[in-house]
Length: 110
Image 1 (cartoon, helix red, strand yellow):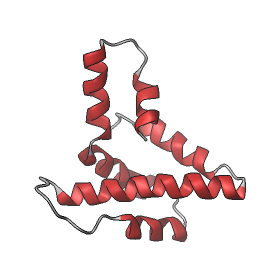
Image 2 (tube, one colour):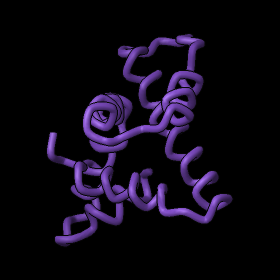
Image 3 (cartoon, rainbow, N blue to C red):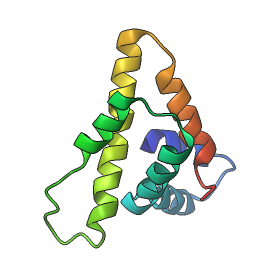
């Protein structure tokens, strides 16, 4: 996910510090949680993908996290990306490309 964000943000050219600040704002848990909420509304997820989202939540909730719910949602989001990446390659379909294209188009629109 971070590589996708960096590939989108690299143009137009920014100072390295500005680029890093922008990328960090888009890969942090709170942003990923918002992106996941929008994904659930706008992108047709299969039942298996919904199950992966549910099971992918980091349920421990330990530590001094300011926003444990956002952290759990971000973990679900990244789990979904990994699941779709692996299954798309195994099944030789374009589901991963569809999902990543949706993510790419929706970065920064929120």
